[in-house]
Image (cartoon, rainbow, N blue to C red; front, side):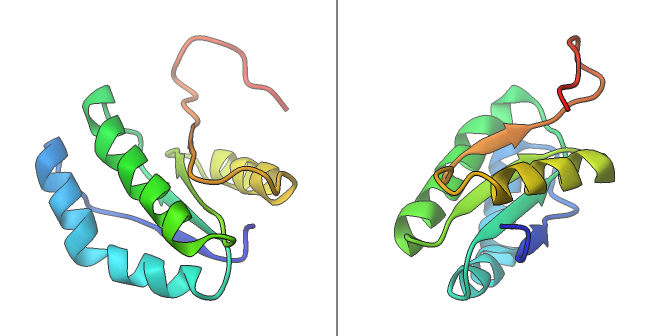
Length: 111
């Protein structure tokens, strides 16, 4: 699944503004990439108030472009992004999901 990775950058801090910016600036590119196969969207970590719009976006893309898969990785570290993409590549049944990797949160990292 790591073939198509779209890094979403420079989204506004406010959830509604971020959702508008994603749909205006990034959605068409995501759809074009999904027409060619599976896609991993990558976004920086954000507060819980961003979860609803992000989940709706990735689930909508997954439904619209099935059997191609769309997933979202929330992570600020290249190693975490690479690990998540490798996990998704080995897990063909996962689509429409958010994988949040936060090295600053309590808890151990699983290899």
